[in-house]
Image (cartoon, rainbow, N blue to C red; front, side, top):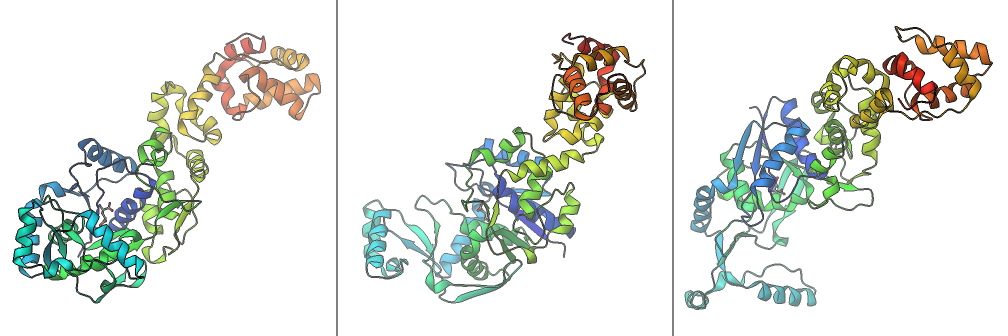
Length: 447
Ligand code: GLU
């Protein structure tokens, strides 16, 4: 059966590079196997979920190259969760609790003080009907906990191999809040089961949830899917990434001019068995990732690595891929291709092409550093048309006249022709600058 995977963000913030990891690992897993990718918005938290964030999730995934095959929203499916909760209640596996957060906190402290693990003591299970009625009369509404079987749940994890969670060491999880809304745990199981999700690939922060959720799958009469828990992306100092980390949000990175392929390569290859390197296409990346070879250690990355990855991608970017963006920067269509070939090796980001276009088209304020070299250049300026050989021929003529060589020859020419002491190979730039502008610059005019 072709796999169905899902990426299930809560639309409560912008996706960041750490979220790109599960999104991509799922998308690549499906891609390599002819499977499908479901985008499920886990939006049961009505207060924090917004339409704007939901739209941003779609947009940011599309930018990464991920177009979901299927879409779902948990807010549309409350009836299914209600039915599942009823089934759990009928089986005696979902019980009403009336403790306030303060009461729970006091109990927790007492347990810790006695050196006991702070596990919910199931006091609510022994409430009598009268006690319950008294709470209700006080105006308390129950929240609902899942009664865990105190046994060890094991599964063959796609990343971690044989994995297990001892559910006796866990508190019975709250599945339904006092206001009747659902926490993530139950809706996720109901959706995965009813939507036919075959593989749940998510961060290792969900390993404990898996123990709980496997029990819920089983109690609801469903076979659990296959699970894989990947390591989390952290910055070099081991700091986790939160959705609020604006500068590493996917849109922040996009606005800063990074290529999606740079983000993809970093997000996927960090902490894998493969060296982090630029991989331009999703298909190539899909061939490289193997969940079984992802490391167990945190996937540490340095955001500065993105610059090097990005530059390498830009240096090799074919013109066809850059074309639209160059035209959007105002570079004329006739010049765009030779210009791209001339400058791409000097770019860290595509948008920097604009700076070099200004050097071509002007106005450039020339810097005249060596009178003899400049005078010789004016005297030997070649007739048009200018082509790839022009620079070599012209520099050769200037060398013959002046005896200047190497840096003493090239630097004054570069400074005069571009106003800068660095930049792309002049052989490529010169035909674009053209005779007229070149001559004016050599004469010291801003052109
Ligand atoms: N909404 C959950 C999260 O973002 C989904 C976790 C899961 O993949 O099951 O953490």
